[in-house]
Length: 307
Image (cartoon, rainbow, N blue to C red; front, top):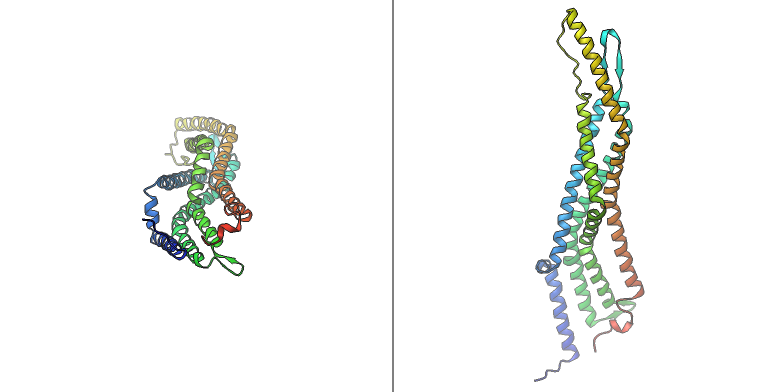
């Protein structure tokens, strides 16, 4: 038996369907349904990337601040060794000044990168709520209203509903798209640079500590015998030679350590700042192109009530 539906019945059925989608979106049921589809992998991959990137950022920040602290201690300490009354002063901190300046600037980059990742985590959680619970619900209500009153003056409600629908999808999935793009760029081009640079800086910190400049042994038991004086003279002379050798070794490697700091700066600027801004800019350009040129809805007939 064939059932002929009138135009009013069709509109009523479409209205019930659209409003039902809006209710499902508002109650977060739609997000739960999406968790059962392939879109769940996008969300999980985005969450995993943000967690790993935030851990890398915090770990790197800790290394940098620890190294900066060690160098600051050396800069505020003058190592003096005086064999037989001849004073020899070693200002090792001056050698480390260029690297320390880079570290202080890099610490600000790390703070900005950590804040960027934390902001992305917050926006990712907000996107799921704002994209579907708010914007998608609003889009469904506008489209349901447009079934009965498509236009009012210069306002095209159906076109407005479609726009809000597209915006809701962008808001919902923009951060996962950003995180996936950042993860791909990191794994393809930046992972090796990051690993090598962090290991080098960690070794640099250990190397500085091994020089004995951080905790110089300035208090020793006094012995006024001639033999003790000769032994002390010899020991101090030996310490001077070893200390100068260690400082010269550090000086020769300053360029390499500075290069590693610059590489880390490049990694985090690209990963946490440039890539997110670039992807968001591309999404905005794509949406603007579709809306301005009416690519989705090229003719006015698309927005008319169904006949």
